[in-house]
Image (spheres, rainbow, N blue to C red):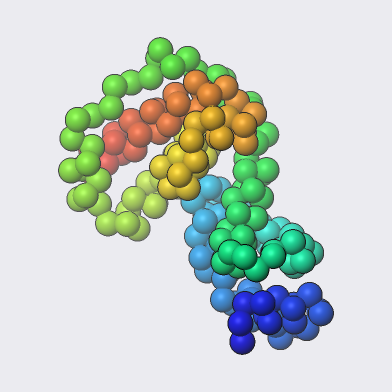
Length: 174
């Protein structure tokens, strides 16, 4: 069954197709939500809310790109919506107060296993983790991040620098 056929069956309300779609993508989408939210419980909530949105708006997927990519975007947007109120509450930090990045960061990161790194990232403060995920993992620019989160571009840059320093400190401690 092609992605388009699966989507058509889901839009027709066929429970088997919806279950198949959920099983195909829930693991990957949960991992994305977990990166943003930091706890399993919050990630599960985001995943559930995301699938509700996905099933309600499947007609918006035009089939010109991968279904998984479109669904991934829904999860990222749902995660960001959940985090926006927390981000806005944090004090904006001037770029002038950002710490210098360690020269040996690449060699330190290479020593870590992927699971260890994801665990450390999940422990980051919410603002750091959100900007870090958007910039380092999702590939957004600081202008896009500032627009998405409703923060200054300099705040995005500062949060990213602080996230990297926070991450390097935790790596050094291990």
